[in-house]
Length: 420
Image: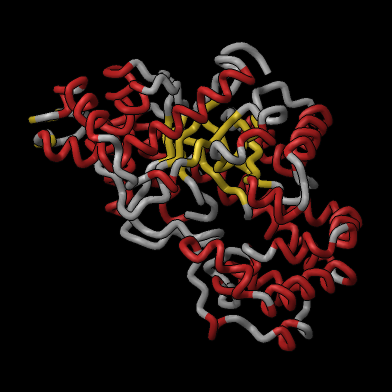
């Protein structure tokens, strides 16, 4: 970790639930580098995931450092304390150098009236006609509108400021990358709302390098985007314009970029993201997170024998405990109960049948989105298996690693960052 840590233009957030796939994930970034595009890895794991698995951030750090050493990776890499708040930040301080400040609980909580008044007083440029370069028409606002947006987001931004300052106290300024997550709210922010949020973040003195706004449509875990691609494209381009404007207007870091949360497998919008980035010469942080865990299951099933038995057991237990497993993720999954195969049917599947149902391949008639989403949130089952699951990964490392690398490079990095 060096002075003034800076997140490069292109970065990919990779989850590694069981800290066994860091090398396979990094290999995908190596493949991008061999094709002339630097995409740096950001290993992310949330407090909730650590609690479920019984792990510590130090294990994620050890796995990442070992992979970097083994592959001779000389470019930057980061560890993300994913979705932390004031209550959970402490356990991540020693190991992480990227912090996703999650203030979702505070969005919509009214700010103090005098704070709202002071904010509007500081920012007369946000009232009236607001012109953002690269957006066709100016936005017309009035004081009541700006007050309303400020009232919805100022408490959340203030919370982010408190977390940031706590981190500065213990880690030092410039020793970590701050991201602010604003995606867990009821409706997408308009460009002018995003501008108001960025003005508030600048007022708080948070040198954010990425921001995760709310986009239109559904960003369900591990499956494709559900929504109007044309509308998403418009929003993404306008958000990039708002960020470029805010960087100049409010002195935010020049490398500030959009972060797409639950960005894994959103194949139908990757082309739009790639084109917009090049249009604005902007960067993006794509969070892929839990798809690596699914590739572990695919690798185990593909390997057959004991690996396939473990994969079947994971599904059997996930199906039996589906209410418990899906409840924490209810807002980011859409499982059709009737489309879940019965465990007794899965019990007689071949490895190919299992992988065909699980692998995200829209061209395969056997692909089952509900099956995939249940297994996506079913990593708790593997965590309960403990050493038995980890030994299965190690016994089938070659097959698992091949699937992890292929998924990350071919389905994610290639279309988003290489545009092919």
